[in-house]
Amino acid sequence: MPDPAPPAEPERVFGEPWHAHVFALAVNLSQAGHFTWSEWGQYFGAHLRRAAAADGSAADTRPMPEVDSTTYYNVWLDTLESLLIQRGLASAADLAELKGAWTEAYLHTPHGMPVELGGNGDHIHTHGHDHVTI
Image (cartoon, rainbow, N blue to C red; front, side):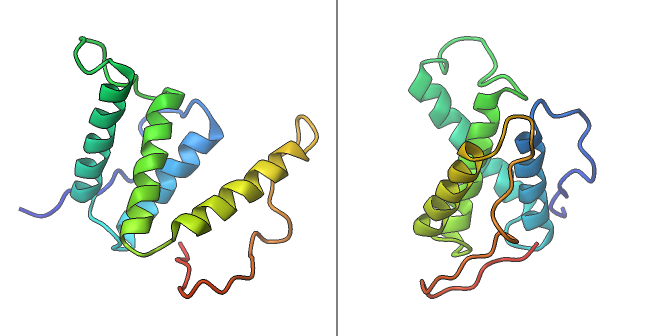
């Protein structure tokens, strides 16, 4: 049986723009062949279970966590970061550097304006690997 494909279009409106971005990034990486959608589901499910165990909700009857919540997309992002590192597409240092750059950009962006990285978002580095273009 062939591997199910990621959804072509989201079936719902996302609560925050970054939710849509991290969703689209996972879909694009899967479509580019970096992992199958079934692999994504397995990894994401494992990360959801760990998050539920960590916050004590694993034993109750609530969904873990509520779909479209910030917690849900934090787990989605954590899963994506783990896969990027595991597959050699990014290092933990790359991700920390990028998070730092976004944090700085956010802190220095006037209220109501879009947050953007300086220039085109490229950076110079010498940590010995290529970056994925999607």
